[in-house]
Length: 97
Image 1: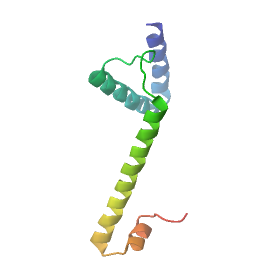
Image 2: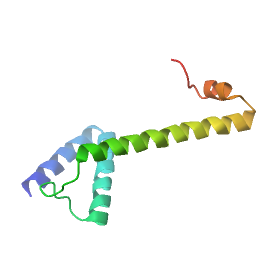
Image 3: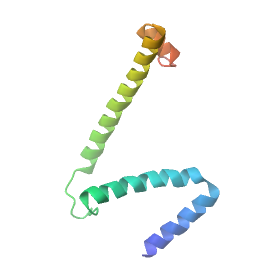
């Protein structure tokens, strides 16, 4: 309980200094709640997963989804303005630089 009180005090200080920091923390808390609700409490002493491998897979998934999003946006510009792929990339600010 002492850790929870310390965390609350630190969050209160951040709330006064900047709401964005608290919103970032809230995003992490939401992810932890989702895991708790779906899989039960986190028990790092007994969890045999390779967390580095899990993280690497998540990063790879993120990169694929991000590339899909960028490609989808480029295709939408190409379709809307009848542009080439290079023209759409330039219109979206992609490419060199």
